[in-house]
Image (tube, rainbow, N blue to C red; front, side, top):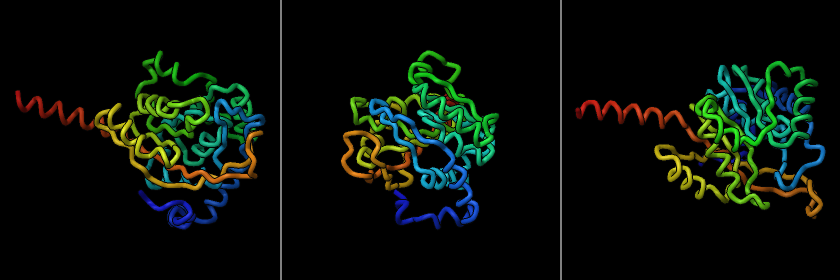
Length: 249
């Protein structure tokens, strides 16, 4: 696994994205309004602007996964990742969010940030949509998401969403998960999606503010990891196996 954000700081990313541009990116994302009334059953937390800026700088510069790509933002919330994607000129951005109130805030965000013509938001249960709509399968070049961790009466929801993201993607999936679940995620992907693997890219200290009534501290730090799954490798493997079978014939 690569060094944590705390170890890396912003320096490694800013070798490619200048300090000035990164600060401008963070300022841009600071306009994204948060959840007005976070719902505990949906585990609603927003990725802080500085972390989102660093993450998307990496996805753009190191992974070439944003520019000229069709982007899907699962569990898009108030639009942080969708707004971040616009910074690097994707072909399209579609945010999928189950909470209608979050969608309203997201739409207000893109309007105030003057990027409404570049982002579409769909209010839906993405798991049901993916299951019942084959047209979504393999539609997107890149899927990004900050899913519920599956810790508050939602056990397993993170893996269901990860599988849905893999189904909809033909390029790369990038997803944030609790670092403590890393080994399980790698095992899950290997078993449920043969030919694919979950790469643990970056460990991040995620500062969660006092959001819900049961929170006693002003904030708490949670270790999360950015997981990458290169779905395109499965297609390459299929072609290789097919060519190998033809040679045997």
